[in-house]
Length: 162
Image (cartoon, rainbow, N blue to C red):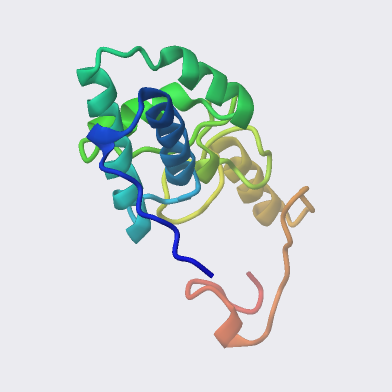
């Protein structure tokens, strides 16, 4: 099997080829759920930045192709491109059509974002419902409540009755 030839340097590529390379690079960034934790993300983001810089130097408008890419992927690509360009000042996360960042979508309601990555992974509304469910010992959709007598399986603040 032959080796795949290396792509020519960005400045030597045709503009139409650069459009597609930009789309591929943006999709690669989108595949990184948590760019700050993913070692490959910085490489993909750097590629987006380099290609975009070259297209800007050629005075080419990318907005139409980025809009079409948004339709193709169901992701909001314009904000992703903007965040890639601003990186490391901002971290690029993929937003679905409704504007919610995929990596932060609440796993219970699947509608809102969780407030942050630290601690509990529920949006404020679902967290309130979960708290009510635990306090009142009533079932809640999407949560599993259980009692255990094994200390190693309990939260540090809990006892056999809580």
